[in-house]
Amino acid sequence: MKCITRPSRSFRGVIPIQLSIAGLYNHRTFTQHSFRARHPSPAAHKWSHPPSSTTIADDDVASLASEQLHALSLADLVKEGRPPLSEKALFSSANFTLSLLPIRLAHRIQALRNLPFIVVSNPNISTIYNNYLHSLSTLLPYKSRTISTLEDEIKFTSVLADLVETHSHTIPTLARGFLECRKYINPDEVTRFLDEHLRARIGTRLIAEQHIALHLSSQPHQNNHVDSPEADPSSSYIGVIDTALQPASIINSCGNFVSEICELKYGVRPTWIIDGEPGTTFAYVPVHLEYIITELLKNAFRATVESGRSHEPIVITIAAEPESPRGGLSRTEQGNNTAPIDSNSPIRPFEDPAPGVTIRIRDRGGGISPEVLPDIWSYSFTTFSDEDLPGVNGSMDALNALSGGGGGEGSSIAGLGYGLPLGRAYAEYFGGGIAVQSLYGWGCDVYLRLKGLGKPKS
Image (cartoon, rainbow, N blue to C red; front, side, top):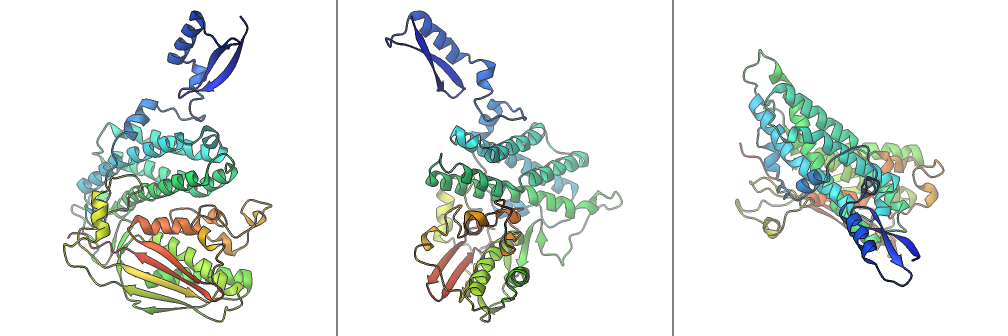
């Protein structure tokens, strides 16, 4: 009987299905098919996921991915107190970090595997997939034991540093991958994936970088002659969190940086004015705020200069919200406490309530056209042509080669249309947000609301 073979993709790989011309299976053919479905060949199994040089059992990934994610709060990150930490506190921080990261990495691996096979096989996206496998493989040896010696803690911190470095270019790499695969995946599906992935990445990096910072600032305790290290009362930092961050200082620092780049490209240096309450302080992660402010100022400065109104300063207003009653929760916070926890849930603040801060950036750059405005929050949307994108024909103007903070995105993200959506992701992760009001033909008002994160318990 003449047969033809049609490849059919299953969860485990490609299984040949015997189809007769008459459309009938004989008993032998059916038995062979059943056996192959239950016992795929090694060659079929290795193609069930994108090729990888890192070997991790599927059961390990599935087991970790099935565990519920911890509802992360800032109180978790600072519960060991101000550095330098004692050995006991440092070990506690390391073990807490170890309890979170493998689960979070496994969730991201599973999410990448759920993408269409042709998408995750793209060289750029496959690179990210393999990076996550590599990072998980470096953490798994620690999963079955407790960190209880300085030697183990130092080695573990080195693994965390490697993890942070490995994923430093995740976003621009993903951006290029999805641009190359835009024919094979729905834009809405890309947006959903990236919304979840980028927010999950913020939390993962924050957890890893927090312990690394605590480790570095606690090194004096490793001196055997120091019995009980004392915290520096003048420091407002607990790891990467500044409990007395002044937004005005971040604005001035980012403004100086962006204006220098503008001067290099356009020959003019935009100016800015800070009004409102510039002395306001609150608890926040400085590197996150630096990324958000840099992105917003980059857009405002560029629009102002290109509209020919560079003589008019950008006006930046800082407004501190009034304190909420002690012990009270806002409607948003109440909702967050009852909502299911996932990897991109906003981080919960300190228990001590604190006012939020709103920053308005007002420019006279001509505003945003109504045709463009609905797309400014879409990933991979950019006003540049293909020739202006980084890596295309080697062209990249200086202003869009800005290196944002935001955890190692670097200059390569510029021009890929991820700046504003990523900035909003950083703001929303802590319960804040970004809103744009455009007066086309005149200018823009951008409102950045930063959720007050409170103060840690003493």
